[in-house]
Length: 153
Image 1 (cartoon, rainbow, N blue to C red):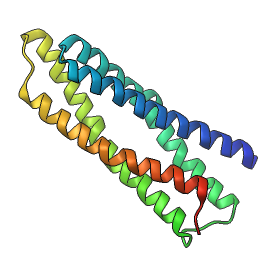
Image 2: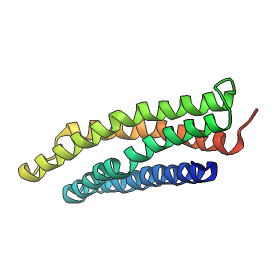
Image 3: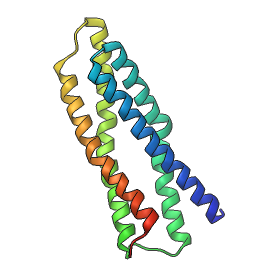
Image 4: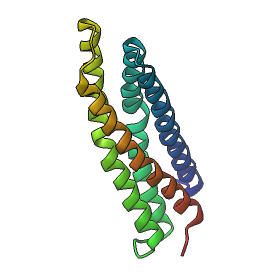
């Protein structure tokens, strides 16, 4: 594959990853602050769907295209910016995996709340962890962007 085509795919997938992440976070966070079960249920349902349709594929594409470009350019992990970029990418992924599980659990609790008319306190504990893990992953991804653009020596 042509390098510039590969790089374009990499940039587009990073845009999808970042855009889906920040958009989903905004809508779910705002819906949760309003504390309207129907709104919260709508938001979390589509955040889960967005993770399956957009986030997961772009995470995979990012890794494959990034490693492929490293290979094409003859780069290895002796360059600290690459090592840090990959370490932070995996750190963000380690934060994101439980977030996916948390969102699915939150969706189930909201479905239960619709039937019973009351939201479990467990939902708000999950919300706390959802916010905490996202707050750790977000700056890591920002630093990855900076490293990929600047390639500091």
